[in-house]
Amino acid sequence: MKKWPWFLLSVLVIAADQLSKLLAVKWLLPYHASAVAPFFNFTLAFNTGAAFSFLSGAGNWHTWFFMGFSFVVSLTLFFWIMRLPQKARLQPLALSLILGGAIGNLIDRIHYGYVIDFIDIYYKNYHWPIFNIADSAISIGACLLMVDLLVNREK
Image (cartoon, rainbow, N blue to C red; front, side, top):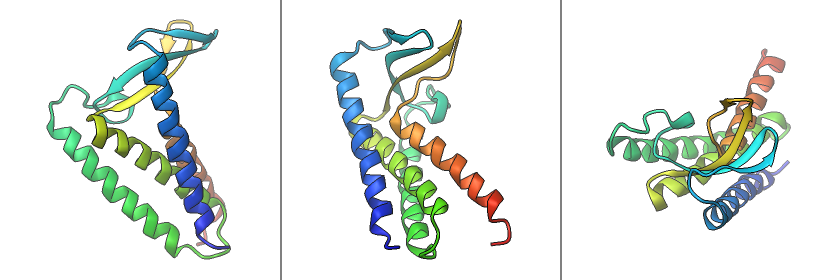
């Protein structure tokens, strides 16, 4: 199989992520929950930190660090996908999702200096940290990569 379909998937993740963030900024008020279901809100938030707002109050140094880290990871994922065997399926799927998510959040960091989050999942009074489509793609890709590593241990 050719590599371009995997990169097309990454581009689709980036497009869905960026479009959803534009709509969230246009239609939602910052930090105001808009109920969607009994366990799900749209809540616009601006994350200056890493995943789950880690280091969000640490100053400006981490913005540059996360931009650089995201860029290096994205390049690494690109070349990793390029070097995969043609018969591989699950691993390039996982890496393509991670690549699309990493670039989606990198675009936010470059453009705004923070990442736009808006998906708020909760149970009673416990709220999962607010996230976005790029975060979802990264998480799903990481899970698929672990499954691939467990299934294909001998490689």
